[in-house]
Image (cartoon, rainbow, N blue to C red; front, side, top):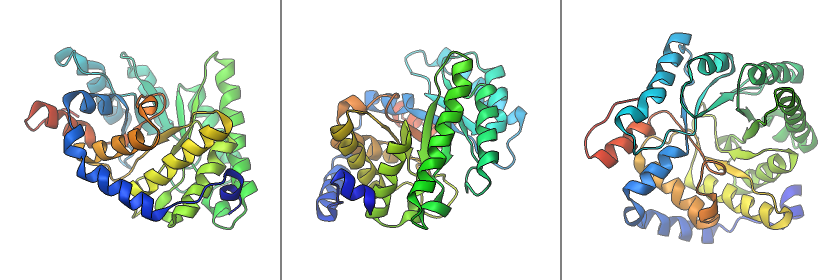
Length: 295
């Protein structure tokens, strides 16, 4: 695979299995109130339901707005993540300090005309999106047309940057690899390097809309690729696991993978996010030692 050769990377499965075994065995030792709060601060609190409405999205935003009234010692989530058509809804309701993340470019399949994808991204940024999550064009990538897959990312990058520049701001681009459909560590690594080179600010595991979503193996490979890319280019790329992350223990696992592979400088919302809908209550429950159903 061309990007593996270019970046001199090959997944070492035995090393990876040993490392993940050690991480799993050590989760209880890293569990603390501060680590849980750090995880909470790096959440993209997500609602991506077919029955989302302006009213339901506004209700979620209002919960985030009011969150620190009763928990002033807690951070806010990094962002609220919604479908593109709700960017304006979140912007209108937002009174607290968090970003607006949208899934765009014909999420979750990415199966449409490039012109349609670009227009969706353009409108989302015009209406307030701070961060745009798109899906790698697997129809090109799986056919080994890597240039077409990369060019689509470059075009989205150019589109959102142009719109944001008119507003005097910057917008981050996250590229979802859909690792459960890539199947092998080598394919995940190839997609990781492709996305980073094409202009992704973050690489993200999954949409949460397929059978296999975030896994520790996929996360470990992606983090190793981020480390290798940083070593060769000096550029720091963020990492976002998403899909199937449902408990505080899951959050600790991915936190530990990032800490182990990339180091503490990646443990902040500028370089690490979780895509979650259920983890917020689980983290609150773990810290407060009772069942919490705030979100």
